[in-house]
Length: 250
Length: 224
Image (tube, rainbow over all chains, first blue to last red; front, side):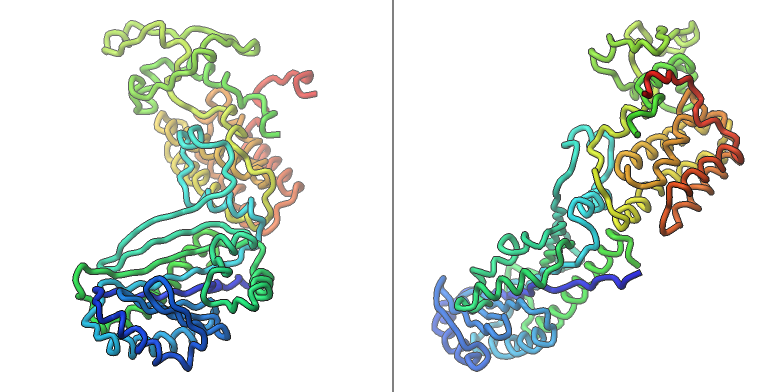
């Protein structure tokens, strides 16, 4: 039997939110300048500044009430290094006292060794109750599905979306690379082609948003690093366990 | 093939009603018919299949004294919603499934079948077996419906009539149920199940378990 295909990270998004202050507009430029060596391209818009590193397919954005990091490469060392630097520098430059929300979101695609219709049949069987009443009420045949839940574990909350996807659904439906600040606009066509060719024909897509929030800035600045680590561990475990369940993988 | 199985028709319900009076059915199934009846549509009530002897459900004096409100409207009602062949193949079977999908779906749909057989065994040939027999028939119908490409479904469908027809599930002994379960589980663990293996399994159950897989008369003209 062939080895089980490994989950592939399509996109990682980190966002920290805080109480907006007028001074953040002025400080955003100063903060962004600290990162200019890593992010060669930048643009203003939407009340913030967006800095892109097309080489490493990543970007960071600073707004008056949040800062974010987004990466479209499945390189976790890069993500760790860039996030650490952001979390060390930005809060002090922006004069933050705490966060109102910390969130880490991952798009993960796990290749499936079957055609789309079969995967839909399997996921329908695994994720939905096969009740007689439902079978009568719902359409005879399920052609596609989306499994969507919001949940919590202690202070942590989740938005979880799981769905069978075909290669050509990933972009533009999910990734929308044409509008992502991680792609060099001058190389958009080649990047889209490369991204498309690297995807499996069919797979199980996970969109997991792991977050903590508070009305006041009670989430300590120092907790962000531990948060990102626990979020990534938890999302990774969720994907592994769900794939084990969905496709009877051990 | 699924739709062609002759006893898997709504007529099975009619036969069932004739065999078990309402109160007896209640005692066996532990279900109150007043709360569980499933009413057929008006069209179904008036459509009498020619192949079935139709008779009105009889109500004994004891039943009336027991407080059950039984009237002429019982005609055409199910005292017990046992699954019939009409359910199989009715709800969107997937047209093509490859081995990887069949393997996963087999694990999902065979498990309730095996679990029902396990539950039936201690109650074999007693009234207590009825609810689990219903579970078994329901689970078998769901399996056949959802994974029609699985060769194991052929084995299950071969024995569906031997269980469902005229309530033969009530006659199966513990050993017969165990043998049936053992053959199913034996096949399920095989990485590849061929048509020959299916045929052998059916013959094995017929010979060792001693059940008739065609416990009804078939008009050859209907098959051709």
